[in-house]
Image (tube, rainbow, N blue to C red; front, top):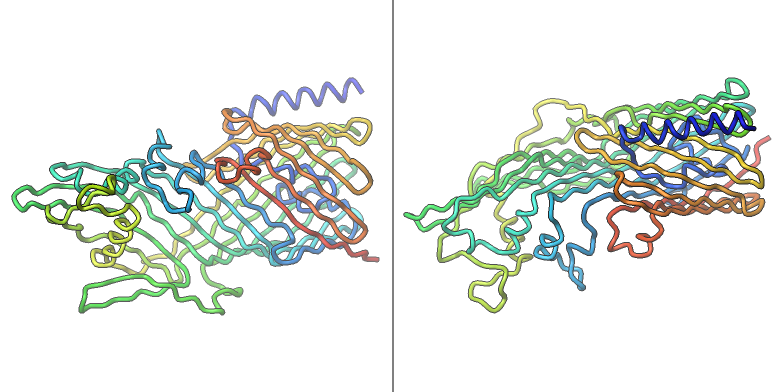
Length: 455
């Protein structure tokens, strides 16, 4: 027992120290459940402990969402949910950043036979990230009048989002008593891709002509169920939705591939460690892909300039109206070209480490470090947890997570496992779940599994 505890302490200390050099994903308590087979989302080597056929149906079979940002939803809307540029600007003292993910299943299946677990799933997945200069918000909050007479670079914004379908085939094998390995190859079908790469906004004053020029620069790439509309008479170019039912089903377009690896190893009867790499792969961009480029400036005569900060003063346009009007002008100063070549777009990938130590009375203690990295964006979650069976059917997990070594968050997960059905709900931040509109870091997972005996 002392030797086992010594090994666990060494591993725990190593994990705590090395996590300072890595970065993490979300730390949802779902990964610590012993009875819920969807815990294998973070490690394909986890075995289905029910020894029954687990069936998850569309939407209810394991939906999750994740939001990490340096601003909250309440920062950018008023009480009537109108977009509030000024409040949003005042709430930021650094560039705005956000990263979000979401997934929901169309089908989920898992079955254990002897020392093998087989799984199959079709999952709709989304991820999006953005970073932007707060001065762009101030530009809309103030209007154009304050910028007349100035030559100024306002700032830039980058947005990237992708929606795709993942068809996964999982296999876990207990090679011997103490070691299990797992692999989960995935076929990916890209549905929608959008990227505004460092789109910049500037203003320039031409005093001799009494004009203010608003100068947008940069490219926007979009791939998905859209069509390009060109009105040569009005020199108007736009991209409009072109959604067809057939686009929703499995089509070999904008395809990609990914793979998950994992292993679990029991050091002794009390101690288990696990490692995994998730979403090592890519999607592709080619089919119905277009690039939009800015070719001209938006020109405003001095007499047509508006202001958006004082409703009682002359020439007032609300920020919402002004932003819509400016957006309506964009198709007149852009060109749209077919995307010239097929591009492989890497997925955000994860690296997960976990250690568990079994105690008497159905208790488990442990820690986990999840890593997520996507190009230049990363975040860190280090979690300690306690897992217990409240009864034969109820399981609970409590977590304390350290996000980016700055913020401490308490999490909670519960599940019920009956003879023919399972229910589970978990979040990494129970406080911000109660105050959702004020949350900056939050994820939520929930699901219902149906269980069938297979002889």
